[in-house]
Length: 398
Image 1 (spheres, one colour):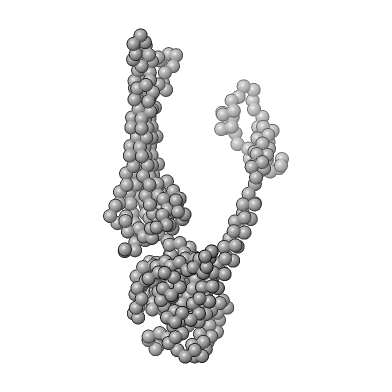
Image 2: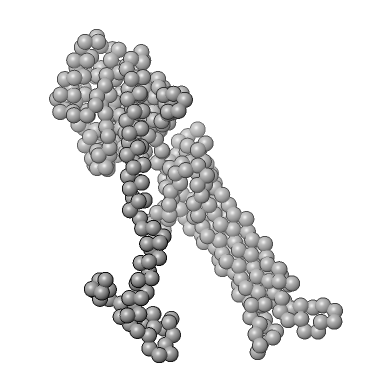
């Protein structure tokens, strides 16, 4: 299946049904009065996360989605039938943007999560709502409101715990094949990988994580050279980056240290936040060199770079060092997740309780009356819309 990570679609919600102008007509009842029912609401359009999808290719063929209109009301105070909602399945990590305004509508990150992208119209009012002591037979009704209709931009950023990055032919696809059940295309020429691949690495029955392989980057990728930065955005959601470096490149004049620095420059140009993520150096293709020479070359490259973070030497073909690498990655991910949960718990603990909010608003209300006493006979609505206390006076009295 072709990988597509961007698509534009038009979503249109249903219109609300019109209210009915009807009067009660029964035997022995001469003046039954109005009994027109309200119109039904229009159907809404939702996006729902589906973990079984990994591409937006379906939207290349179906670009329009229209929800059902609500039916009009009828006599005997019967409300019209509401229009059925439309639920569109999208892969996890989909970001939704309004094309006209450029505002982000939301994003879908969990299975079963629903995001409203087009609100259905409200049903109109029947004439039963307009009867009064002076108008016993009203013929006035309210029509239903139209539903929302807009063009939205869908952008997919894959959800993965670990991201693989490196120059073309650095061994990224070979590594993900060795440690997971993913089967990307592997060959000894650059740009074999043309779209991201996801693989699940299972350490044991309780621990696993998702790893993402993106197409290789080259110098000038930020300006569109090669495959450009088309897929670099998929690394923005990861918790850990594995920077793969080829110790035995096909070209003899290729310097691994220079490649690392070039890739760091491209990451800085695209998003400086990527440089703040935890990143490990992983030297690959150790099987193509004598063991002592490969380790010495990897250590020399790390020292020349002034690398202070972790680095490892592996061979995906012989699977030398791959299991140890995945085990260490799993341990670090567990610590990162624990830190995220602790930070979230601190944020929740800092929020005021319901009782504190109640006491605060009660105090503000009493303070308002002290600064602006109500005139005799004044209405709350008019006074509060015309008077607003100054923050300096409130802070002084507090």
